[in-house]
Amino acid sequence: MACPYPATIIPHASWLPRKKASNISPAATAHGAVQQPVHHNSATEASLPVSICNTLDKAIDRFIDPPERRPLVDPQRVLSGNFEHVVELPPTRCPLVLGSIPSCLAGGAYIRNGPNPQHQLQGRTHHLFDGDGMLHSLLFPAPSSTLLQEPVFCSRYVHTYKYLLEREAGVPVFPNFVAGFQGVAGLARMAVMFARALAGQISMNMGFGLANTSILFFAKHLYALCESYLPYTMCINPATGEVTTLSRCDFDGRRMIGMTAHPKKDPVTGELFAFRYSMFQPFLTYICNHQLLHDFAITEHYAIFPESQLVMRPMNMAVRGGSLIGLDSAMVDMIHINLRTGAVLRTALSPESLEFGVIHQDYVGRYNRYGYFGVSAQLPRFSGIRKLDFAMVGADDCTVARRDFGPGCFVGEPFFVPSNDNGDGNEDNGYVVCYTHKEDTGESQFVVMDARSPELEIVAAVQLPARVPYGFHGLFVTQAELLSQQK
Ligand SMILES: [Fe+2]
Image (cartoon, rainbow, N blue to C red):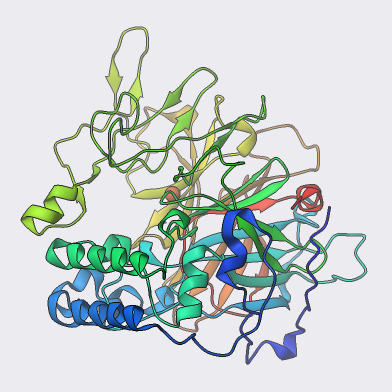
């Protein structure tokens, strides 16, 4: 079922200037309701208690926790270059500037999630993780389409409760969860947040999720996820490329708090596995401290949770004036476990620093041979892509294919799309795709690489009409999946 939301595709000549998207009332998002557009031109007038809270927040930012005291969360540094936010972009046609789009991409869409703060304030501490979620989607024309002849790119905010409330207010309402909760300032911000709740400005049970981390397609629904809160159901219009937020998803009331941004879909059984954790007991079953558990793995019979060095320390913030989130360097990093002997083995796969690895999604939870990784260069941007062959474990370097993008050009997380040419059935028969960005010109592209080429040869490139900020995780959704979307 296609999305019921009309959209206009902007031709090349209309790329700039860009209009902002139509506005949607935060009240319409409550309890999974489908949103209806309402238009407004300016922030709503604040009540006296809300105005006092706004003043208190500004005072905390100015006098207790000014960004210049903490360079690591100074927005002038954190939100510079291609980390600076962009405005929304309606569906816009894009020229193919190299090669041809493989048939396995036709009619589908590549979507990448990432943080893009709605209010970029220079006087307020900010961490990359604190940005509002924005989806950057590239829809590819289907062979049978008479409407779409070229790829269509669209950037839209996920209309979370927080995003809509802060758009209505015209200022930030919630503290920045990562940058803001530190020492006395963190406690003061928490007090102001509760004062806003008492004043009726915010509803605490609506959460302050950012939906800025990843994308999932499951059971005919597309979700934007962030582990701080519930997923939001999204929709990509398969005819126009428009990106729409449908609702906050609480799974029919069965899940009222957050869940991982990295659920795992078993390609054989079709089941979806996820976990959640809390600052409070029982944290996560058999994990005996309150870690930040960002990701996990599944096999045919087990779920595997790696112990993380990231831990939440509420008392560190309250008593010692430290950060809510800390690093526990004493923890052991377990990599390989022999379940029969109990032996633990750590084996290096590459001499390079590799991150954001992905595999062929049909091999999740099963033996797989290949992985595709970004070469770390100030996360989450990468200077190149590497393909590793896990069958070579034990060699000094498992790298079997590599591409470097050259000085000043960086890419985001790679994603593997299997070919549909019925080749030889090999796991690596397909393409590696990602967004690229040239920092000297500000240009962004979408590139398609041949996964079996030792140079990861670029076989297609699409020039994007706007800059794509560095972000987090992406996904390719097939045409059949797009057409199956349900409200
Ligand atoms: Fe992640």
